[in-house]
Length: 337
Length: 129
Image 1 (cartoon, each protein chain N blue to C red):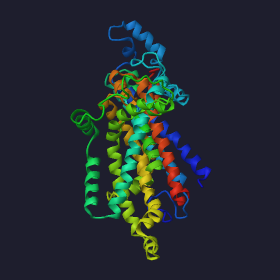
Image 2 (image 1 turned 135 degrees about the horizontal axis):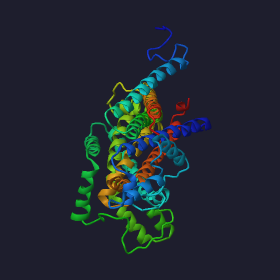
Image 3 (image 1 turned 135 degrees about the vertical axis):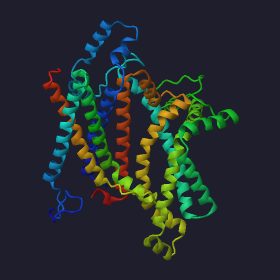
Image 4 (image 1 turned 120 degrees about the horizontal axis):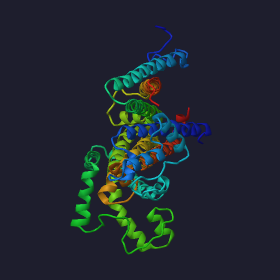
């Protein structure tokens, strides 16, 4: 049973995280060159018009007043309006449509990482120093070492160009017209009972999820292997085997839960890398999520979008880690103390 | 040196954290930040920049340090134990620890806040608002 005190304590930790990110982003954007008023007005606008915009945005106020106002508005989830990308649209509105796209890819990537990483790690530990163990370790090291901007084009080349098995970009074939309900397209197609559209969405999602999940899978399998190897050598495992319990049952019943403790933590920390990876993956696969939105916003100097996107990333990351903490304390109740 | 203290320096042998010692340490860091912030604003103005530019730049640098420190502190509390575990399991152990990281980040936050306050007061003193 997870204690309320533990969960509340972890929830309260969200406050400094988000305050830190907000302050960091505010500072970075104020140190970056460029004038937001000029960005909005355009390069050919008159000085008077630029001055007028500057007054409207409160850019003439002292920086500490701007900082205070930014923090107060951020608490109210008001990140302002887009300067350039969707001119005049509230940032929260832009994020509402883009966030599910990235979340879908990150969740599927993480699922692939977990689904393949845990069994591979287990296999490596149970059959230590066998051929399969060596192959798993080589695979894991390769997965950790290969950057997304290289693995992305490679899988596109192999699966989309050479083998012609999967689509190279987009979220669904253009012949399907799916009305967004949740924004998560595979879920929306299922809710609307359109299985052909679901197949198309899943096929489009497979390559980006695979690319984003490779690193995750590699890390999880390596962690699972080392953690399980440690657990296998414990006295209670030897006792269980000495009492005549089969080795598979011993590993799964007594070892698995204990070996999962560090793996769960890595999965949580890994989610941040996954979101970071989404920025690259979306750019490579032409997916319009918040990753590619962030890149475009930085390029055109759309500061409210940058602030909103980074804060959303931070919020997601801390939320996932909160979930991990709760799982962690479920697996090992001593953690709460 | 008080011999009741442990090696980490801010937790006496009875296990309770020594808040006064911690506050003194953060206060010193904030003082350092304050002086640096005020001097930097003055330095920019002396070099021919406008008070507005000096104030914006120094305040933003202070905020950058504060943001980094708060993020680092909360990140250490959030994931420090996990990172320590991961280091151990991946055989990449270093001397990094959650407690050390938290202490360092607290000092850095002090410098950041000090810098921000220093830049504000220096700006007001120079009549930059």
